[in-house]
Structures are given as C-alpha cells and as structure tokens.
Image 1 (cartoon, rainbow, N blue to C red):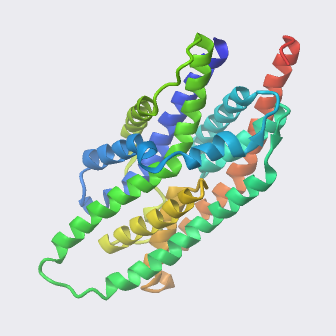
Image 2: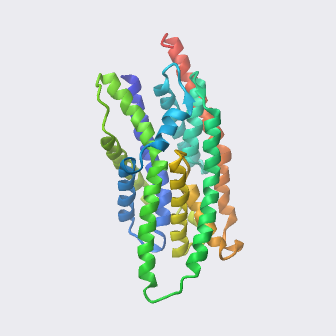
Length: 332
C-alpha cells in the first residue's frame, strides 16, 4: 500500500499546486479593472475544472498517461510517482527562488526523465511534437489577440458600451476557464486517475472510480489551492506585459481560449498562461510595439530554457533512485 498512498499524496499536492499557480495566473487577468468579483471567478474556474472531462473528453490526459513513454515492464505507477513528485518539487523550488516556471513543462520533462531513469523508453518523437505545439500556442495567441484587438478598436463607442464590455468579459472568462480545464486541467486528471487506479488495484476493487467523482475531487482541491493565490492577485507578470484595458483583457481571454481549445482537439497539452500572455501582447500590438513592456516577456523564455531540462533531470534522478530501491529490495 505504500506506493498507492504515496501516489495519492503526491497527486493531491500536485493538484493543489496547480490551483495556487495556474489559478492565480488566470485570476489576475480576470479581476483586472475590478470588473469581476474574485470569489465569483474562482467558483467559475473550479466548476469548469470539475466539469471539463465530461464535456471535452480525456484526449489530453491520455497523452500524459499513454503517449509519453513505453512501459513494457509495467512501471507506470512508479514513473508517475517519480515524475509528478519531481515536477512538484521543482516548481516549488524555482518559484521560491523567483525563477519563472511552468507546471506543464515541468511535468512533461519530469515524466520523460523518470521513465528513462526507471528503464522505460520515452517517446521522443511524441514529446517533440508536444513541445512544438506548446511553442506555437503563445504565438497563435498573439495572432488571434491582434486580430481581435483590431476588431475591438473599430467598434464605435455608445452609451451602452460599458455594459456590453462587462457581458463580454464574463463570457470570455467563462470560455477561458473551460479551455483551461479542457487542456491544462487534464494534466491533473491524468495524475489523479493513475493514483486512484493504483489505489483501487491495491485494495482489490475491480470497479474503476467514476470519472465524475475524480473530477469533483480535483475541482475541490484545485479551488482550495486557488484560494491561496487570492492573496497575491496583482503580483503576476502576465498583466505587467501591457497597461491592460478591458478590451485587451477580453481579446486575450478569447485568443488564449482559441489556441488552447485548438490544441486540445489533437490531445496536445499547452500552457494557458503563456497563451494568455500572447493574447495580451497581440491586442496591445494594435496600438504599436511600444505598448508592450517587452522586458516582462523574458519569464516565458526563461520557463522554457530552465523548467523543461530541469524537470527532465529531476525526474531522471528520482527515477534512478526508485530503480535502485527496487533492485535493492529485489523487486525489479
């Protein structure tokens, strides 16, 4: 029972971290200009995370569980224990040191490294495709944000415009929450599903845990993690990219939703926060390049340069450690 319990603990910590990290990044954009109450947007985001598997399927989750590595020896549980544990520890360590990071990149790298450390074979070609799509998503956000920004600037102002903007903000944020849950959120489902399967198997239960119960548990833990981020609203680097106006925010939310939902259709995990940053940049570029504070785009590049290789290295070391323990105990 040690492995299933360890997996459940690591999975819970991972979902909580996603809420505190990703939830905060989305909330900081959503509450810009005090257009939406923090508690309301928090509940919308949590509900979307809980409902998305039933609405959009599990294509992205299956990429994490089935397509990142080949496991002929049946060590998938150990790969996830090592990979998720390494990714969680790495994100906490880098965040504490003020180094920009990405949970999605950390998990992709750590799972691949852990698989290699435990003797499995990482699916290098699939990983390369996933990373290529991940790179393209923020640029897609820039393009769509730019086009939406051009359209928004051509809408004539009327007395009813403020009310229309508020409605547009609510709809755009709701769409963004669903897009996040359909893509980013499924990495949480993949991790928890592996942990729950290991637990039910260890307990001798043949029936699988219903998807609805897993999704509900994820939504609750994610929301609790997001509550932590409410205290640091306004400290994120995403909105520092531009002096955001309401139409910037709406354009960015719609642009990121398009980029992320498009990736979800092909089962490709991408970063919602980076796509949102791209959407903000695209919307601001309609007013000229000087509207973008380019120095705040550096964290996105640092996240790629640091997080992915560091995640791979951390996962590899933890995987090697677990492999050594198994050999010592005569399990492998």
